Length: 140
Image (cartoon, rainbow, N blue to C red):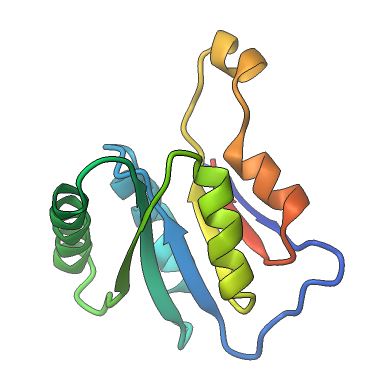
């Protein structure tokens, strides 16, 4: 896995880091997290887990709490604020979130795509790198 930190021109680098991990609650997210967290574990940073959902909030809330609990089991010092946002278009929800939190570094886990998906589907990571002023950390 390769960590990629994209810092847009004009993005402020904070004295104290705040990270928002955007998760689709995909089974591979925990694997990516296990590679990413040791890179920042020594920092005195604030962490949030953000999940964008469609449908029922209580199901999304339960799944996000379960994911956070798994991370706490693996990393006893891990603590994060859990955040849920509803929306059909994740890129719009993320842009709104980052506009509200310009001090946060967005962390995204890149899922492998088939060749067809790579050619014809939009990349949320790529869009975030070009359309925000927030630092973006991608684990691929």
